[in-house]
Length: 246
Image 1 (cartoon, rainbow, N blue to C red):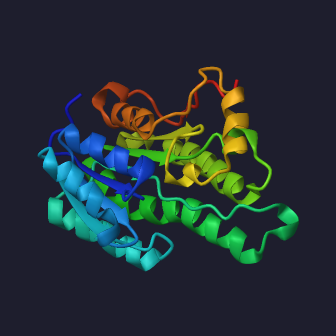
Image 2: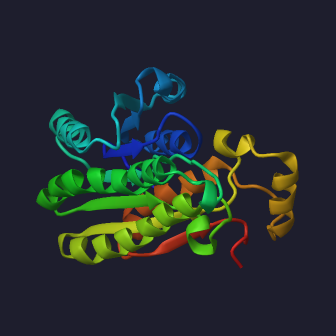
């Protein structure tokens, strides 16, 4: 599935799932604009992609700043002449039980994980609508479908992404722009590596495939949803979780 010379924006591209997505799209021929908090934080992603001949351009953008996002989106469109793919992957956690959750714990997660996707989607779709083609892919979570104690803020943001995506799918379909959601299960990343071992083993026992996912499992689905092979798919949720949600 060649994506040669298509321009893809991937937020949260400096590590984990975002890094794998950026690498996968670059390997398929995309020009990848990788969004992270700093250019330096995306250094390893850039080096890995360029070592295999891929094209990766890092951008330092605060996804919670509407102005910064709009400026960056327009700059990317001007530099490369188009935007074909947007992957809203950037996310943070501030896990704690509801009674201990501060207003900042709530608002920071909602602002980064949900509002950030809104900030990116609006200017990017303006460019896609002119081209009458585009792919929006929002990275949600299995927690959006199941809930999880201590993650009310994260679950709310990720569930919001699902409703957001379904609405965009309806709005943008007449312009040949698709919008789909991926809900990863327990993926082995830096974010999950810090969890206590007993928690990991408890989750593992609930996964029918008896293994944790890899960032590349998510990246493979992003590749498919970015390609022409997925042109008749929009407004859908792809749960990649080893069967955890069954």
